[in-house]
Amino acid sequence: MSSQAKVDGSTAQLDMEDQPPSLPTPPKRQKASSFSNISRILVFALGIFIVGSIGFAGYSAFASRDIQQQNAVAVIREGPDNQGKAGKTPPPVCGSTVQCGGEAYTGEVKLTEDLYCPQTTSGTCAITLEGEDAVLDCNQYMIFGDDNSPGNGICLRNSASAINCNVQKFKDGIYVENGGEINECEVMFNIFGIKVENEASSTTKMKISNTYIHDNAGGSGIFFLGSGESPESSETSIEVNNVKSNHNGEGMSIYGKNVKLQVQVKDSETSNNSGSGIEIDSVFGVNISAAVDVELDGIISRYNGVYGLLVSSVTGDVKVKGAVNLYKNGNSGFYVGSGVDIVVERRGALNSCGHLASGS
Image 1: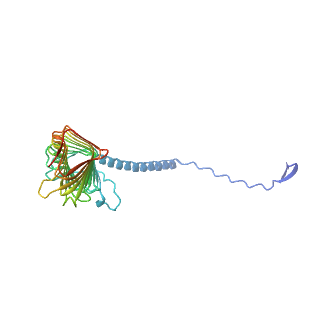
Image 2: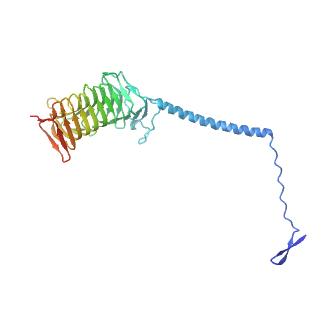
Image 3: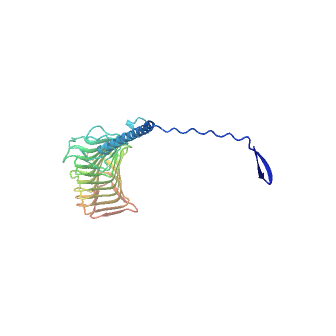
C-alpha cells in the first residue's frame, strides 16, 4: 500500500507497507483482594505504633531526668582530679545532692534548694570546697544553721570559690583557708561573717567582691589573718571590691603575723559597726611584726563606734588613691600609728571629721 503527500511542491511517495509493530497491551491490573488491603493497613498501623512507642520512651526518659534535676538539692560537676581524661570537663551529674558535712567537693556544685545544717559541730562545715577548680554556686539559695551553731557554713580551701550564696547562723559564715574568691554573697547573723586565714605563699590571694556582710554582731564582718616567717620573705594579699560591711562587731579586721600584707579596698563601705570600720594591725606578741602596702579608693566609713580607719603596730604605706570619707565615728576619722605613712595621690582625697591621731 502506498500513499502520496506534497512536500515542498513535490510529490513524495510514502511506503506504508511496513507498519511499525504495535505496542503490546498491558495486562489489566488485578483488583486487590480485601484480605490484602487489610494486611497493608495492619502493617502500617504496627509501624506507627512502634515509632510512637520509641518516641514516648525517649520523652519519658528526658522528662524523668528533667524532673529529677529540678528536685535535686544540687547539680555537681567534678573537677580535674576526678575526670576520666585530662582537659575534658564532664557534664553535671544530674540528681546528685549535697548533704551537710561530708567530703570536700573539688568541682562545680550548684544548689537547687536551701541547705539547712543545724547540727554542724565546732571545726566542721556545712559544705566544703577544695582547690581552684571547686566552685559553689548557691543560685541565690540559703545555707543556714541554728542560732549560735558552733560550726561553719561554707569552707573554702586552697583557692576555692563561692558565688550567689546567702549564709547565716553559724560561728563563721564563710571560712577561707589559703586563698579563695567570694562574689555576690550575703552573709549575716553569724559570729564572724567571713574569716580568712592565709599562710603566706604565691597562691594565697583572697578576693571578696559585690558582697553584703551585716549583723554579725559577735565578731568582724571580714576577719583576715595573714601569717608567714618574716615581712621580708613572706607576703599575702586581700582585695575587697564593692563590699558593704555594716552592723558588725568590726567592719574589716586585717591582721598580719610576720608577713607583709598587700591590702586593696575599693568602692566599699563600713558603717554602723560597734568597733572600727577598717582596722589593719599586727597580731600582738613577742617577736611578731607586720608590714603593709595598703591602697584605698572610694571608701565610706561612718557611724562606727571607734575609728573609721585604724592602722597600728605595722610599718609601711597607706595610699589614698581616690575619695576616702571618714566621718561621724566614735573617736575620730582615723588613727595611724608610728611607722606608717599616709600618701594622698593626685586624684585622691582624704576627708575626715575629727583629728589625726598619731602614735608615739
